[in-house]
Image 1 (tube, rainbow, N blue to C red):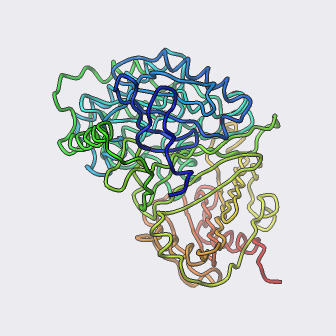
Image 2 (cartoon, rainbow, N blue to C red):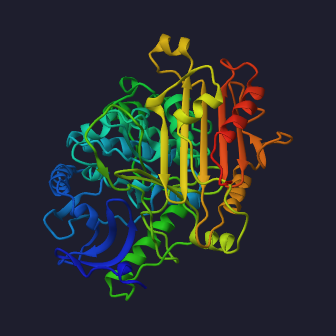
Image 3 (cartoon, rainbow, N blue to C red):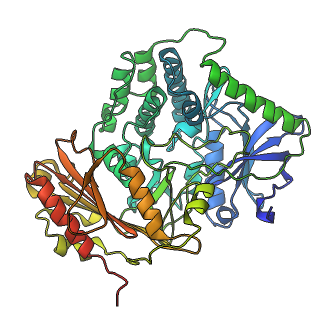
Length: 544
């Protein structure tokens, strides 16, 4: 076990016992106060502590968070912004995250969903009254305690965002968890309390169905769905459907307030055991584990999970108006529970199909992208060699656009170009002139083209990795043969999507995706094939 994986002995007066999880802000540890009470202690990463502006932001956000009280939040107990490693302690909740509970036990029944909805609306009301916007309400930030739900991490993530939140959003930064973002969050616009209400709606869909209402095959496709497509509300109980539909209105002004939600939902009755029995067994497991640590168990080391994780918290930059440079650390939450017991900081429920892919987006002078799978599976599948990389570098949207010959207008302010070491992504959007002029650019793009690149590293062959990932995501889809270019291809939702055609093509260690709107491209499949071929030809190869 390396020294970096050892737990510090204390944070202020709290003795630290075991790691519960970690993220962009820091590590979450189980601690015990001098009077013997357990606490969840967030120990801030050293890189934040070295940031000149971080401590003042942290102090301000902690002060606001301490004003939050109520039965459905985990109250802040203590904090020290001046410590060598700043820390914050909150009430320890012995319960699984909503994501972990749904993954293990399945969707919640109607009565539990109603109770969850009331609890989350009540918690948001308390958070907003303190002048905070949660900004990252997601299944792993909702804990299911034995007597009801608890919302955690309210207001704290904002401390890591940079010099000022308005500068951040003005410069085009997007922060949050893609499946649970609001449209305005996905577009990097200023956030209000209404953004949290949108996230609440998405969290309720997950709790009711086991999936996000906007899930796509990638984080960027999910973001596109959040902004442009209607949510999939199939499977919601009839009583909850109209409430969730209002929460997921694209226009923030059309969403109810938390108080309005409570009026729509109505009261809940008392219940000694509000959750399904299997969820209560998870609560009991976590309580027993915490008690064993509090009673002197020697477990004080970090055990790495070897299963996959799904789309997580996202921080990416979309080019926008010029502004001051902003430095931002990754906001991706990577839980590290011991192997025998998941914790209350578990990974979110994976998308319904395809390989679980963890995506971390960060910025420190440049935008970073990393994709991955479970440690054990990764080592097993990449321990041998494979074909050399055919592609190493990516085109920009401006470079590729002339070759693609799309008749619509390239939106350079929507371009996404991401890079980190062995992975890269470029995504470009074209908007039809007539439609854009009619609605002020608020319509969906008429054409979207994206490139996903994986590069080989010691112990990993990128072509083998990309081939397996492509095979996983194409299961059940309509395969395309005889293109004359690329190694393999398939159409997304071929029989069911009457509005669009979506073609994905793999060539070695590269995947190209094309989405065209049929209203703008009547001969959609033919056009998509031509665009995909041109997009592949626009890639610089390693030859020569």
